[in-house]
Amino acid sequence: MINNIFSWIIYPIGEMAMNNKTIIAVLAVAAIVVVAGAAIIVTTGDDNKSGGGPVTVVDTLGREVTITSTDRIISSGVVPTAILCGLGLSSNIVGVSIDTGIYDEDPYVIGLTDDDFPKAITDGISSGRIAALGPMYLMPAETLASVPSDLVICQSTNEEIRIALDALGITYIVIQTPGSMKEVYDTIELVGKAVDREQPAEKMISEMKSAIKKITDWCESIVTDEMKGEKYRVALMISATYANGRNSAPGNILTDLCADNAFESVDRTALVSTESIASVNPDIIIYTGLEIYDLVVPAEFIESLYADPIIGNTGAAKNELIFALSGGARSPTAFYEQGIVGAYAIYAMFIYKDHLTFDITNVFDSSNYVEYSKLFWEQINA
Image (cartoon, rainbow, N blue to C red; front, side):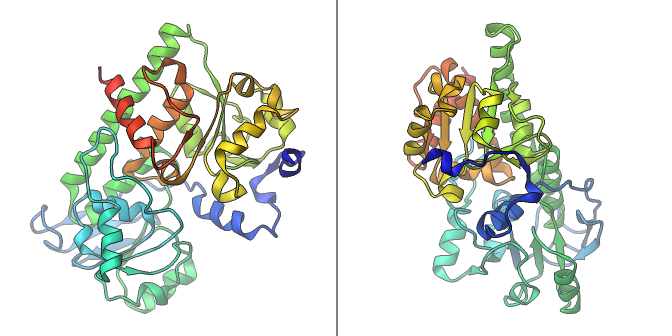
């Protein structure tokens, strides 16, 4: 049965079967897009108040946008929604996009000041204060215009939608899905400037950099001092058949964690076969989307791989170092905002499991990953 769910050859992501609309749509939303440089801003009024005065920014499409108020904000994308909450503006949000699992993330992020994401959003939707506008991907202009707002922040759009928004006289900025940590920071900076919250944005970025440095320093010390420069080879899988390669945000995280990407030869993402996985012989395999893309129970799927005649011969299977994410544990690894610090922690725990002072399971889910993250934070700060 396992052989039936794997393809027998590597394909670029652009050559995916067009009849699998679900996977294509979701992967398209998650596609990594290179972002333009930092925004430029001229502002008047109180820097610590939303709507303190007109603000002019340059968004990631190079559009110069003047924002006169941010009292009512629509966020079409989980990235700007999370950032707005982190900047203390959840009460200004009047409309948000809704996609499967985007509000499953636990509010705790190691090393960061607690904010009210996602509870403020789920509570706001339940009370009717925040309108649930539907899926993020290419949300129509008419949907974005259905709720009165002062500013719309779009994470996914195209020229047709932008022309319609311009015709409707809607003030909006566009951010692209970040593809690197620098682009994550640039996005936070851009949103912070657009909503007149530059200082909170700087604090958020500073906390993120500090927490990530603690994680990467810990990993580097293991590789340098204990492994004498040897590195683990990691296959970071989106699904049973799709792997993250170079030039992908998850692949870049592996590099930051002093691990070798088993599919470094693949550009961004690719469809891989069982033979392909076996040929790179990873020391560790991590699956991030089995429930969504393959509709399987992660724990059962991992157990089946240990007995698989092909995958079972890899170092990862022989040493029982195959891991998976489930439920809310996926969120830090799926969305690129301040919560991505959690992805660094999760991957580091999987890769360096034998170097932890506590035991972990091979599947992280909503019930355990936060507690593991807290224990991990205690260890690297000891």
